[in-house]
Amino acid sequence: MSLFSRLQFYTTVNHMRDLPETRAEIAFAGRSNAGKSSAINTLANHTRLAYVSKTPGRTQHINYFSFGDEAYLVDLPGYGYAQVPAAVRAHWEKLLGQYLATRAQLKGLVLLMDSRHPLKELDWQMLEWFLPTGKPVHVVLTKADKLTRQQQALTLNAVKKALADHPNCTVQLFSSLKKTGVEALEQAIVDWIKMD
Image (tube, rainbow, N blue to C red; front, side, top):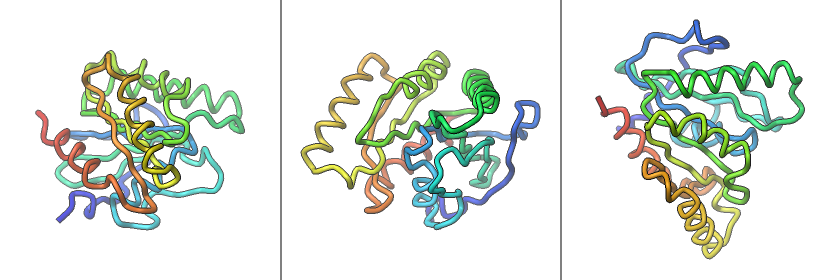
C-alpha cells in the first residue's frame, strides 16, 4: 500500500509558533503555477486533497498533511505570484525562510518547477535559503507532458548540470496528467522519512 494513500489533511499554520510537534516533515514548495497541489493530489490518488486553483497563490499558509506515524507532508505557500499584497508577500517570505532554515524535523525539500520554465530567480532563492542546511533537495520538473521527449531530456540534463555543484540535489521529470514520475518521487520521500 502506498504511503501516500494514507495522506490526510491535518492542520494549517500561519506562524512559526503554531507549528505542530512532529517526528518527520517533507516540505513541498514551488512557484504559484508550478503544479504543486496537482502533484500532491496525484501522489495521494485523491482529486481534492490539496486545493487546486485556477488562481495562483491560493495556498497562503503552511498546510500539514499526515502520513501517519508522526510523519507529515508540508505544503508551503506558492511563491512568485505578483497579485498578492506586499505585506502578505513579506509575511510569506519570512515564514518560508524561517521554516526552511530552522525546522529541525524537516528531512528534505521537494522543489517543484514547471518543466517549461525551470530555475527562475525565486527558485534559486528557495535553494539559497535551504541548501545551507545540508538537507536533501529533490527537484521535480512538473508538466513534463507539455514537452516532447527530446525537450524533456534536454531540460532534465540542463537542470542537473545547473545543480551539479550541489550533490544533495536530485532532479526528475513529473506529469500529474500522465502520472509519470510518481514512483520516483514516492521513493525519494519514503527514503527521507526513514532517515534518523
